[in-house]
Image (tube, rainbow, N blue to C red; front, side, top):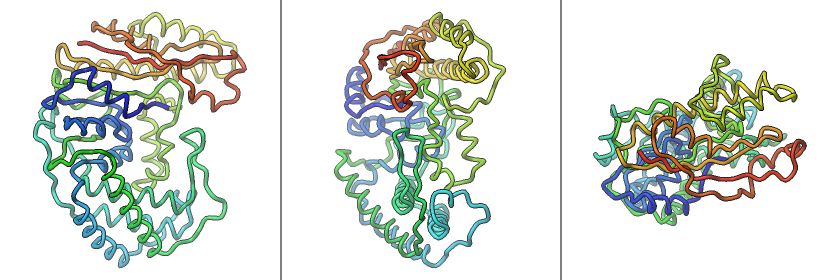
Length: 404
């Protein structure tokens, strides 16, 4: 599962020598670990993420919200009164009822509708954050993101569904509990109190403006000026076909519908959804990648050529486009640290760190693996059949350094 610890981001910031006047980019920022740690250094960060749910959670971790607990309490009471006066009608074919009772779905949708239409205060944003951007985009209001994050947590808590060993699996209860709108709002207010406490204990310095912009942005087409970013710390999706969008399926259904969920899945790099079967092998991906693709094409296993090969071609095409963008936006002599993990196709090892390195070298920039660790808790172990083709597989996590 792509990601890294706060300790890694701390060491990476110090390794890159990022200074307070610099702008740091994470083009796959997820829930915002890079930004959270960078905020402790009072660094400006821009985060790109296809999934709007991740942008909401990331914006809710702002140091601007520290010291705002009384204002948050005031807003939440105003919102509470509006919600109790405006219970939504039941929707036909509501996909949310796959995860929760009809009464809970109605209450959650009512609360979300009020949160979406509420007129939040404008929040001051560090002006330096806008300089690298080609245009000033819409970004989540921190108060709105805070309340919506509390709503998502409330929905999961009351519905009783939980994540499984695979982060895309969501287990639901057979007997879905019914709730009144008053019960739902009461739990939402309780979650807000917990979140305020969590912010206070997250060792985030208080800021008088926003120093992190989580943007709905595609890593293959960054809306950022060339030569404008001082450093990149990130972890892209690995070649493990994890369906990241499905891990937030209930939340995506809350803010929109099944068609929107499908569109997010199709846009997510590395997802098991094949969008384009016309992609051809490109020599710029390097010898290691091309050798893997030949092994997949020649493999006798079911679906090797019909599914796995086009899925990999799509992944490597998207990775190449994303790496081109990362290199483009970096300032000359600046660096990026990219964390990736190896995987296997049946018995064949896929050395992802080496492949990323070869792509960058073929794109004309300096690149090398600067750290490698053995991964103990790899997501592949979730699949009990992963050892059929090869026993005792070893997985590696590589830190790839790009120097422009």
